[in-house]
Amino acid sequence: MVFLYHPVRFQEVLVTRDRSPNLGRPRRKSLRVAAALALILSAGPAVANDTVSVPVASKARKAIPLPAGDQIELSLQQAVQLTLENVLDLDVAAYNLEESRFGILAARGAFDPSLEVDLGATDTNTPASSRVQAPETKTAYGNAFLTGLLSYGTTYSLGFQNIRRDSVIPGYTLINPTLSSNLALNVTQPLLRNFGRAVNERLVVQARLGRDTNAYSFVVAVQTAIQAADSAYWDLVYAIENLKAKQEALKIAQDLNRITRIKIDVGALAPIDIVQTEVTIAQREQDIITAEGLIGDAQDRLRRLLNVQSIPDWNRPIVPTDRPTRTALAQVYKADVNEGFETALRTRPEIKQALLNIESKKVTYAYQKSQLKSRLDLSAGYGASGLGAQTLVTNPDGTTNQLNYSDALSQMGRGDYPAWNVGVVFAVPIGNRTAKGNAATANADLELARTNFAIAKANLQVEVRAAARGIDIGYRSLAAATKARELGERNLDAEKKKFENGMSTTFQVASVANDLTTAVTAELQAIATYLKDITAWHKAIGDLLPQRSVELSGLPVSLDATPAEEGAVK
Image (tube, rainbow, N blue to C red; front, side, top):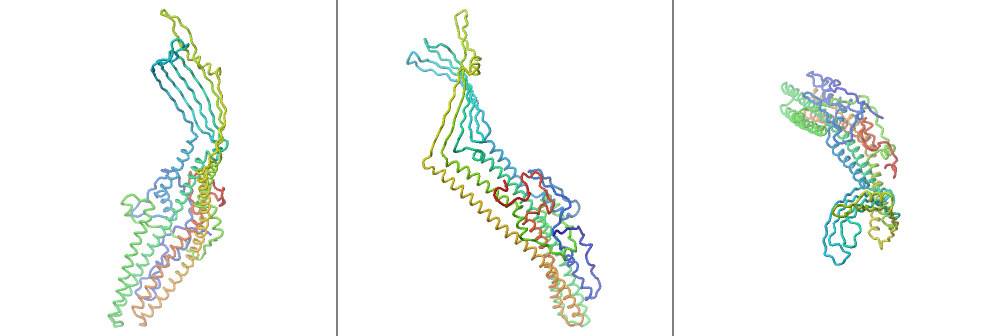
């Protein structure tokens, strides 16, 4: 059952207070201003007609200015929307989500190829100890290497090497200087340890799971913000109406004091009777001071959620304008515990986070199990090389050698001098205690995650049952408080009549009036508590966002109901 709010000005439904000097019948309505709230504030949380869209990306939310005027008039829907746009707590959740997105990018970087360029030159002079040793060797090299890792554990290296060597050995050197080029591709594929995508992409998968976890944390933050705005709004409504009740109680005390003075003047009462009425007036004035403080505290809590920045806005009073309908008081808000728990298991973001944690632990465990295996790597390579050709050129002063680099590239391209290699590396760790310990730890972490999931479900059961119980108790407490207030009014009317007929004292009238004031305050508190209990129920079962027509734009995860079991959320 869902109750709908209708924005109704409280002042439009107040019972008019009789200004007659008679103490009897007019006083029957003396506290109706506060009691009327019991007939009006008795419905569930507001169901928004307009959808509120909350962007997930950091800095995407645009602060909404507060309503202009001497005071800040807010409906419940406005308070919720302003909170979702302005509250700083959502910025924290958004930045955490953005950081986790960068974590996915960083994890994928493990598969980015690496390009290395190596350039250099050397000049080495050594004393010759034989006829086949050059006294001086000059080399210049320019190499490039492209290396990387593939998702199945394959490592590759593509190298292009070029060396120019100038080394003259008298009587033995045929070509000088020489320039050689080599192009080679080498690949290594693990067949046991570190084989497969599950092992090599684990960091990417875990980073994605971490992002999804933070996404659900953002959902939790939004739900918490809605509940906080709702609670602060109704606390402010309670504080305002409580002040009205205290003011009406003061008027009763003042009227009793006035009538007592009249009776003393005509000799119907002793002068000492005036003391009790003055004590009551002092107590009511103290109650008003306390009630005004409650309003200030409630307004400040709401200002904090609205992220009020300017000093003038902090000084402007907040006036809530929404009230529920009268007719909802006679209706009972049914909260099915079993159905609510099943709904919570499928929709609560905390449950989805616990499942994501299990999936992350599974990934770690799979990797550590791979490290228990022996190492069996298959390696293969193929390449080609070439050497620069010589051309004899006759000059006036003799013959010189001129190197042609294109000959080296041509030989390498044609594969005139190929080279290949194939090999297998097999290694068996002795003991392998590090891997065994890590695997056992990972398995324990996985079982711990499953245990935490079971604990989360148990806690959720308690939370849902407590929320349902809160609605039941809240509704019955509201009914009892309403009945107590009604009886208090009747009792005060009866005591006033006795007082007029000389059958009661000012002390007794003041005591009964104080009881009625307490009953009105309790009723107001019961109303606010009941409204907040209904919001807590929707948060407990996980449908607070659709119930309040709030959508999250840009959320990387789905909020659709999913089974509460391993593998259901990935």
